[in-house]
Figure (cartoon, rainbow, N blue to C red):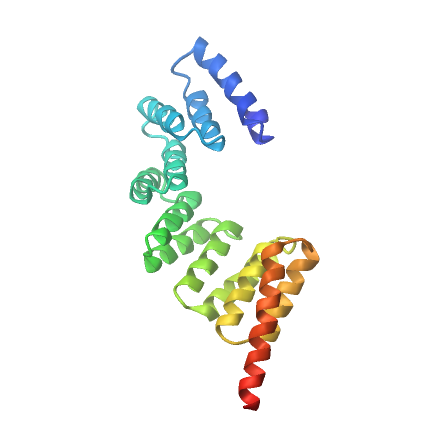
Length: 220
């Protein structure tokens, strides 16, 4: 079942977990993992029910609290998600994923300073944590701290140079500080990775238009 889940075959994994639970209804890891798998096929109510049952079996397990928080994040119940991540971190104060997830929930509530603190704590506990670094960059961008965002986008690109997303997001920050040539270069670098990325192609046209208008305004 675990192997099937890692392969993204969630429905097949659920079937195996349920067979285990028919034999032992209190099997914690099957209960927790079937909850996670159900969320991946968007059966959120069933997912949360399984995770709550898993918490009843092992309330001292930080992973199940983090998993429940992640499902609540998916359904946009951000404060409830934060409460779960709080519990996961209480049980495991070095839990990088829970800090990063709590940062995401806080960002959705526009609590940018707190989100930044959580992403930084995640990186402190797990060096080179791409997800936390990239989300920290995005949060700096939303907080209009563009130079700090660019520093983190560069760090994210260094960790995953074949991931288009940091190149695209980096271009958005560069546009905010009127660095259109660098923004276009960032988009072009992303399009080398995926020439069919529609959002990048649209952003390239937007950058060219902005730069052209800026030149026209300078020339009067």
